[in-house]
Every structure is written in C-alpha cells, then in structure tokens.
Image (cartoon, rainbow, N blue to C red; front, side, top):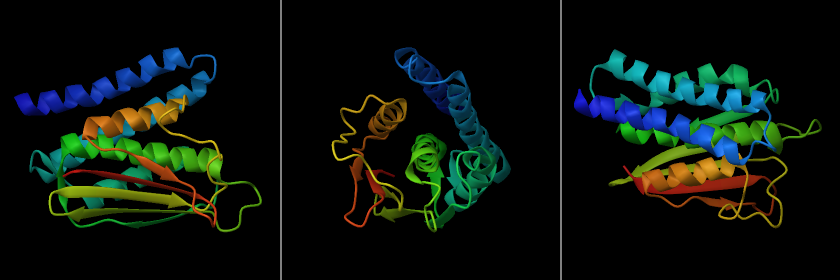
Length: 197
C-alpha cells in the first residue's frame, strides 16, 4: 500500500508540474487548452489505476489493454482537433509497472495531441500516425511518427519553450531517457525514446 500511494503521489505531482509550467506560459496558452491537457493527464492516471485494480497484479499492468483503453478514452478529445486520422500501432504483449507506464503514456498522449493539433492540414491526404513500443532485454523503446507537415527547420526540442516540449523533456528525464525528434526527408515527424523497463 505504501508503494501504491507513492506511485499515485508521483502521478498527481505530474499534474501539479503541468500547472506550474502553465504559469510560465500563461500569455501563450488558452485556459481551455490547459483544461484539455489536465483532462488528458487525468484520463491516463485514471485508466492506469483502473487497469491495476481490474487485473489485480500490483504493480503490473498489461500494456496492450491499457493502450487500447487509453486511445478509446482519449479519442473524443483528440478528434476535436482533427478528423479522419488513421492510428496504427505495434504493442508487445507485456506488463509494465505502473510507475513506468504512466509517464510513458503521458509522453505518448502529448505526441498524439501535438500531431492532431499541429501536424495535419485540411488538404492532408490520409493523415496517419504510427507508433510502436518494443522491448529489448531490460530496455523499452517508444517510436512515434506522423506524416504531417513536419518540424520547423530550426526546431530544437532542448531549447523549445513550448509547454508540450517542456513536458515531454521533463517526463523523459523522469524515465531516465533522452528524447530524439527528427523530420524525415519524405516529410512528417519522428520521435524516439529509449528507457529502462
């Protein structure tokens, strides 16, 4: 129980961190956007602990069921930004401890939100997002890409002052990984993160 409460405290602290980040960006982010982001975080935490309760194998949660449930719940918020986006995914049938699962899921949802909000234009043909999670020994890798407009030529996630990038960088550090962003020659955006499982 002590460990469970500790994990929950950390998850709620991430929402507090988001509010604190908002103080730095209060002139560039609308209150509605902040509420949407907080709503997204709440869905992640609620889904993780619901699955934890249902599966009864603390601290482990099945990754496939969690991601599928998360995408189902997040769908309404995401499609308010852009419609007809095709999401493809490859997820291994593994179990992860909830303390690793929730920050990883928060990064994934932040990437999805950024793609839905910024990557696709009205003229975009077949807007597609693809992500995979793979495991290699004691490592876990998240790969993500979309076929949208791509990143600005001068983009540097380490120097980016946007709320989303600050949040992804902070969560990646929490997991002990270094995020990498790229714009492939064919267009779009790709992201990768390698962390301990």
